[in-house]
View (spheres, rainbow, N blue to C red):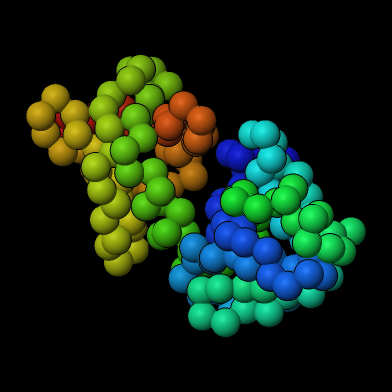
Length: 171
């Protein structure tokens, strides 16, 4: 599993008690929808490591999580101040907008035209959400569509696209 195929759910803030539980801050719209999680990925040294959840209790945007094999406060040091991820296919529909918002500031690189510009906004429109990209001092609107968006490189902050011919000219 890699970062490009996952989305950030939240971050582990601190230890909770002495039995290996941790407090996590969830960065999703409806955290309570994730109260049945069986596992998550924790980013450690730029790699995603799976952790199985023994127990989770979510209240508002905070969760108390007990991971398997983390049984005392000393063990929590491994996961403290680390980000939590889930595979993209587990994303709740309403989280997609939040995930796309994380692309603001990324550079857009087209398959044929190369690097074009930076993403400045995401517009939510009935039927079709749009990426707003600054290109040669004007705004270009790119439909959020799997046939156009090829790959997200989170490390380099690049969104690779395959724009339909003429899209740049009609904006």
